[in-house]
Length: 318
Length: 311
Image (cartoon, rainbow over all chains, first blue to last red; front, side):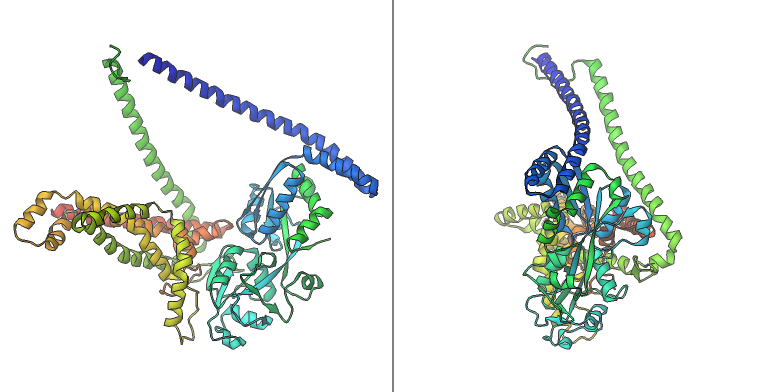
């Protein structure tokens, strides 16, 4: 009885080790097939470009078939990290891109613009999302700024607030701490609770630069994501904060600035002055990236991609 | 060796000494791993925390009051942050330890059996709740209450910056509740392990139950209670996730209704994107935290040893 138990234990240990070694072999095989598939993709992509240039109704079917073939062949993974303002865009792009190319996995983390640029500079992700333009030092480190959309920053207050319009000077006075009560702005007698983002936030950088209060802001709370700012403003009477326009929902009210409502049309027309670029930064030019990342940027520049970008409430760039 | 003996890895005497030696070796290896971990963490913290002290200057970092790491001319003063951690932890301990201790006395000494059967599982459940849940509850329940209090207290103030309820007081309350389970569980074990002869002797000499508890049992359980306090303080000073949500995260003097930043939340909120000198200063903050914990441990252990020597 005892000997047979020992033998049973030894056999199961040997079986588990053999299983582990077999798993290792299988993953190596998958990597090799992936490489041969990518070579086939380049040919499929070239065929797709030729079909697109013809732009005739009969060719559309051929184009769809070619892209479906390319979609079935393209595989790999893309990792993104960065701005919390770009969460809606990143998720929408990931979803539609993965639907078009089932072999590709797109993952996105939301850690803040500066963290995203750090990550792409260090090479730990493929794309760094940033909701502000890149600084000189970041560009000098080899990171290329690819602007994929324009976004507006909305200034939000809680829904019970009666103030619906602010001028730039009033905004400066609120954020530097000079104006402390809503009654000074024509509202009720309630204190102003100034909410902002953490120091590395792209939204904060863009907001402070555009309004002109860099390094002079006195925040009551520095929260670390777009969602946190919206939630805090929605639940605190008398709060004011700023967040990306496409993330605003009906739990907060977006105020008009200088009489101009924060809408896509006004940003396009240039009358709403709080707008900033959404950047998908890469280490090196797009042409130096791998097949899957290039396919993503091609997709974003295509009509399908632009439809996705407009669909989340952003403005496309030409 | 007949078939009815139970299975054993020790078959005979030769195997026995081999097994003993192997076990000894494994235990020594595990202990060595523990020492290696502590030593390497200490070495890593010192190596990464000191460059910034030389680059920026000890006085500027430790005694400066302006924290603007991403400004054009950055300043890295963490004095307010250090004071916040010290004051916040002290207040949380002052609030949490007496409540925890009295609950432990209640559970060990004076509780009727049925009530104890309800309170004990509740305390154990409290110990198992992850810290983020405390933070969530703080945001949803504590912050609105704190905001109403703030509005009432500072009704006519001209200079106070209103924080919407996310301030030092909220963080202290959350920390106090978080250290309760640790303090209660360990204190209760310490109280239960006091020899019953001491209690019987005291009662026999005519002391009342309360006199016995405070004059005989508590001093006898002193080492266990001091351990509980040390662990509670360690948890309070090292907590980041729960208080990040309720403390406001601006760098201010640690007054009860100010939005404040602790040593831990300072590291957590900026480590993701810090670069260059900023990153090194964050490591210095970690080193300061490390030094504080060492000081607390050494001081409280000295108090412990002094108590033992007197006995």
